[in-house]
Length: 155
Image 1 (tube, rainbow, N blue to C red):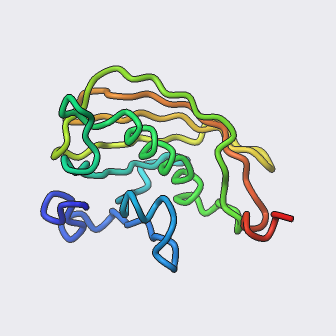
Image 2: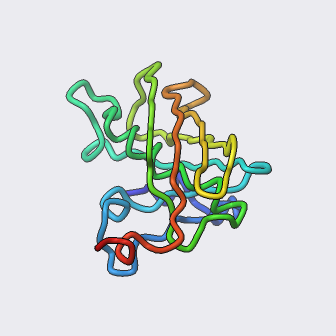
């Protein structure tokens, strides 16, 4: 879980927390809440403190699958900070990651996420994950914007 001392929003009031599903279920609830803020038009920054007992790989670094999950959970943040996220949310159509360096649990991972282009149904996103000023991961994604929640669009 997030170390409240390291990511204390009390000392940085511009940071907001993601909200888990009302029932406390779902993948985002498994990962935990993420702090985020708007850093420019169509740009958001998020941070998360990886837990060494839950998010590590066998070598002691932050697992690449966790980095991918963190990146994907941050994809919609540029839409959130611009208030253009549709009622149904978004789903990932494509996500590409490039791993550049190993990251260590116990120090915040920072995601810088940018909305590159937005159409009526699609959002094109790019971003990076860094730690201590070092670039760890780059990513690009395409999101499909939904007009209704997935549970209402399924047959």
